[in-house]
Length: 417
Ligand SMILES: *Cc1c(COP(=O)(O)O)cnc(C)c1O
Ligand SMILES: [Zn+2]
Image 1 (spheres, rainbow, N blue to C red):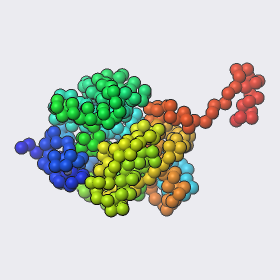
Image 2: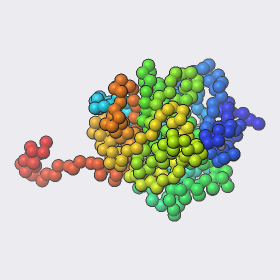
Image 3: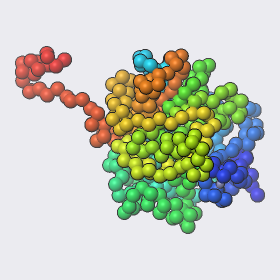
């Protein structure tokens, strides 16, 4: 059987069984759990031990540690390579140094492009006849965007209630948009079934081990951008938990290949109205067996990108928490909106609610527990505020209303400004 030049095995995040790689193996044949891509110890042989390729841009700079064998399916759009901004201010109780990783600046305006770029390239390598996924928003619009960039069409299953900005992106990118008369879970299940029966590529989070391999590139960039001063803590907003497990996987790979010497503490920040991972982590600490810890909730947060009943990569997130000694934090919707407003007005970064959730976690941690004061901390900003104007308007201050007459207008402005 053909061996993969980068992948040694796919190991189950639930039952821990290891399986030989085959192109179509996406979930554990023993228990149905999510799979983790294990890289071959000699994955860097071809590059003489070098883990990054400075001649490339964005995520392709890290091709040596990506589970791809060709350059065939690469999007020509620039995915990743996003700015890391140091915060000028010192937050009371805050960390020594605080950085914002601005992933709203991806082609379709969210972090999901990292996942999509690598998943799409993998789909092209395996000759998938059609590329599909279920999504309420960013994952779908990202897939549609990236597929369009290489002359392919994505098929995206959406629930009837998909938010307008994201639906508009999908349609303009030319995806085949299948509106399912049901909720996200119905769209997810229908998509999974169709892909299975038809041999289509299924990008669904959790049902596809390669999205995590794209998401891990953010950690490679952080190590690259921070140089000598490696991060002590990274705050990540978590819904399905796939970004979180991806951030962990990136640091794990670098540890395994001897590029870094220690794992940062990773913090999963959730809305208290979509907190399945935080609850599951507490159950694990209370001694509940791993396979039983994750239970669905009824999610109602306004942060639609992290509104999840049953996290599709919850087990990946829990394994990541175990491995890095991290923890989960819960914030209220009000705190998320305040963080979005804080971020926009103090840094110029405009984030959707889910994109500001990690920052809400940092502000809350500073206020309640307090940082030591000498650590380097990163907040991931995962999506653009233009994705969800309606929610953000709730956090917006009022404008100054004036008549068009100069004197009357100035009279008001003199007191207002
Ligand atoms: C998808 C998404 C998240 C959460 O990622 P998960 O893998 O679902 O935990 C956070 N922020 C934004 C903007 C997203 O689109
Ligand atoms: Zn398993």
